[in-house]
Length: 220
Image 1 (tube, rainbow, N blue to C red):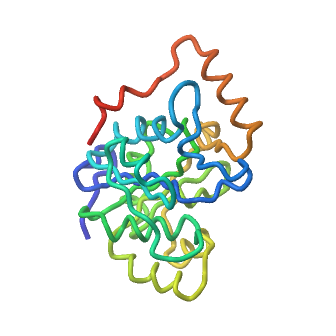
Image 2 (cartoon, rainbow, N blue to C red; image 1 turned 45 degrees about the horizontal axis):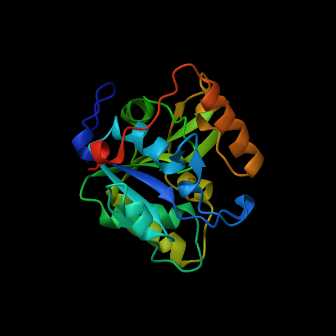
């Protein structure tokens, strides 16, 4: 197993994965990653934060592949049918990734922590195992995960058996837990138009919001 240093993980050994393959039901069926947030598609906010922590990005998306590809990262789609959930996106990304580890995040959490990889890597180094996930106030956040490539066969078998729940799969592997109770707002996701309007207003009211860089400067 490729080790990851607890305080200075090597970004070349980790691929960042933005999970954007959902139906967006509570957003009226809109593709959440492409929804405008304070002047930029939501996925751009997530990519901006994630690209500071890893060298390589992948977007997992099941719709509008050309639109996502325009952001400069490879796009992969689920091999499982019918929008099988975030685990299917993680499996697709693991299949496409060339690094030992993937760091997964959802596309609708634009305030994700700037030290997400560092803290997950430290938890894994301390607690061991091939999977580390974030935890906020004792609530697991299983799609904010650091996953080793060797877990792909088990994940595919889990999905092929018709299973979909991320936390149930994580429990099979006794995940290391990284506590982020000091920044619960970083894990607030946008599921509804109301939540979208609230966060957009918050960002626009900020004296110096961390706006994503122009697309041509961040293509990778």
